[in-house]
Length: 505
Image (cartoon, rainbow, N blue to C red; front, top):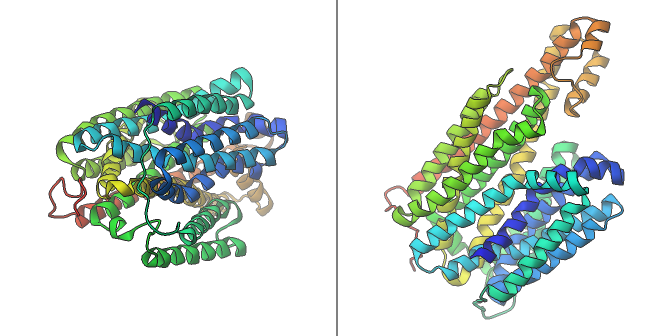
């Protein structure tokens, strides 16, 4: 179990650890903003696009074999990134790491499904799994900051390599192998269509935030992705051994849990990203102050996950999943209320902790519902489906809500600047400054002395528009989580609390 959670830790850690290396990468490799975005997104894109296929291949070829192969690829990508002399090579290394993570991470849940056939023991193990995932996400920026400060940005990838090799050795030594070979050929058509569909949609969602979702090539990618996904569904319903068996995924308990997985991770990453951005750009928090604000949230995620494991073991998945969603949504709503022109530290920290507690509670039952609603021989498919929905929720959340926030910087802010009588040419300068984080917190004394109080009024207008955009983004996250919870409650209405908790043929 320790080795399995170590595999999970290293793959989840890389979702957030690289964010603190970007400034050093930019100065060392002379990278532009778009390349820096892809240093982060290349990993997430490939990870999400290939995970579903890798999980199903693990069921067929052997879960340990695919996990080991994934770790080898992950280490190779880490080495390539550590030795990169250009940003394009660094992005390529991150993409290779994403391939490795997609191969190794789904096996963590699948192996747990086989290590703990007893439902109560499995629920407690899933509590530990969810706690480690929350710890990895929260610890990424902290550990990355320490490494970059002491040894430079390359040390992050050397750490990945060393840790990955140790985990690889432990996996070879201690993780048992299991497989459920299916007759007939591998579903290569499903593999190609699934990866193409998810890859195109996620790529378009990421790039659409920068280029605009109405841009021709972005729209074309969405269309291609949609056609590929539709083709994937058709193929899966016709082939003898589908990569995703909709007879299982379509069960009410499984389907509702997958929807909740998307919504919860949509919310988790939106509150991490936009709250931190607001505190830094508008309130002027330092990195240490932001870390202090989010530390109780990370602790709450871990505590909620561990407690939820015991709760699910006693009561099943339905009630804790719904309770976690409600608490998480309440935490997001309270966070939204406390992000004003001025911020009181203690109430904000309490709101973030409440959101973290809800997220931690929700992750265990939604994972358990999917794993337990599918036969053990298809546990790789179930694990991959759950993690794919998580990754898509995170990517779509940041991209879609980022576009929403940016829209307020071009519409709401424009209206405010017009009301202040700011000339057209200066409006564009102000909007660009806000989008690039070049607006000084609290005003600019030198500019105010030269041009009068209009400077402070413009800055306050910019921050007010940004605050309104973040407020709407958090409200959307809250409503999406509540809608997912309501859908799950209605879908499983009248069912026993343990319904779907153990696979029923």
